[in-house]
Image 1 (cartoon, rainbow, N blue to C red):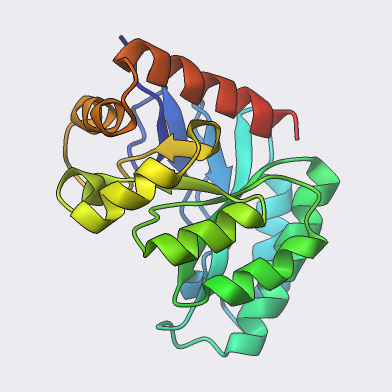
Image 2 (image 1 turned 90 degrees about the vertical axis):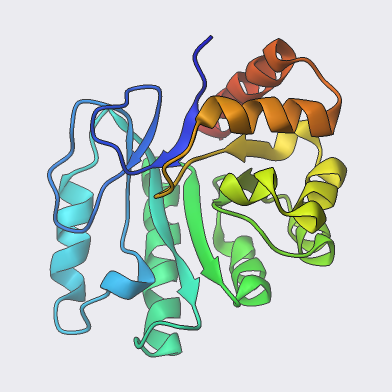
Length: 208
């Protein structure tokens, strides 16, 4: 059984979404493209947007990762401006968005009103209350390695509807199948049905 990796950094893995780093050339596997908060060049933002716009091909599944991060040095107002421009671009090309968020969840929620496309918080590992607020605002949540050992996150996963979840490895080196098996156990559904649900979720966000 193949397992879809919603957000990863491995160039040779076709069954997933490869996160294209800034200024890279797309590969021939499904990828996402965006300007991460840490990569914003305040002196070359327009050039970075040109790179992104010129690299959207048939293999581009999503815009991102992009979003807001309270730990990076880039001024928050600039981060918000770049985030909004990417939301508007995603609307134009009709692609879902993979969102990077660090301690800015309610700010990200406030930007949801500008988006016509599905938004997925990648690497979600926060408290149940934040998950509930995101879900109320129609976000999807993508879970990673932390689900394997974080009991609080496992409880959050339990309350997250199966039609709102994705699973990912991100930068971590571990077995994606192990994650799928753990999630099927937590959700009380078979591995096959979990895999089928993820595939249905992908179709849903792909079609807006």
